[in-house]
Image 1: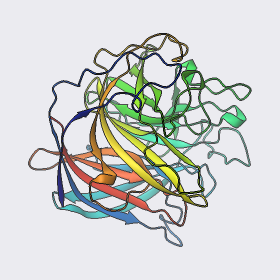
Image 2: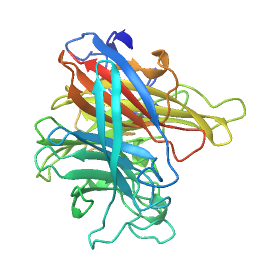
Image 3: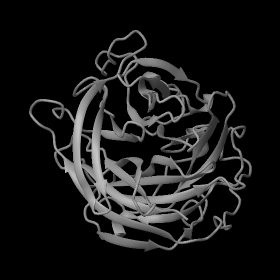
Image 4: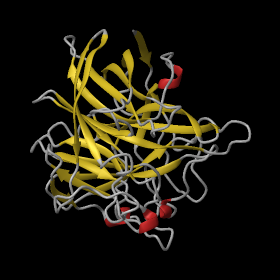
Length: 382
């Protein structure tokens, strides 16, 4: 067990200065109050596929949430109905202040379309899913999940509601600027779209996070510059929404010599309150032929007096104030071993001392050199 005390560090978006063409106002004001954050690593574990049974096609975990009413965990695979039909898993996870005590995958649940059929794969075409986030609606108990869509085929990202047996309940409205446009560079980028989903503790507000900028908002992060991605705040049950610019870091680590593939973006969010979020920034860099290592940072971000950019068509134009952010934990500098492709995060039950448990999970991409990793932390956000 490793105890870490991380000093709250306010950052200036993105990287050391704004990308060319952007006119963000200064974000030198720190989140208030400027306090330290106590984070304790409690342990890690990996899950392996099996030749048959529930774990046969386990992997690609890109979303995760815990339902305290039933003590059930839901883990969403981003498999596009290629390994097996699009699905989520239910699990029972035992944990304590000393780490994981047990983990059982209870079931695999195939998700259904509106007509009751399974979701198709890329070869069949149609509403091919690319699941990235899953949450238990605090008010209804339904499951709500997101898909990134597919710009190549003109399939828009979506957010849908389903029952715990995977049955389709309905589709929720998204801001029009998050749609894809296969014929021009406008809207969501391919595979860099709707990545994060969170509900506020009272269930009255829903947050959505993009992984990367819209085309009109500027280029993706580079080694020299960060970028701005849109976070959407929606009152549940209302067509109204606001959007804010979240500053993503520049790529922290380049690809190895001769390798050029590297990236950085938002992979998930959690609500800390009405206008405060915990953000996972995940970066990958190529170290071999389509083999990657990963850098992961947790940030606290706040709306504060950030500009509502919903009516700003392009962040390349005009002035706006981004969301403030500060570093909570750099996982790669925490001395806790290998960090894989972290794409899912969820609160768990509180420990007897009142601290919240936090679980991070990785998407192994069904790749032989990656793992299905779960990491358990106790966190005290003051």
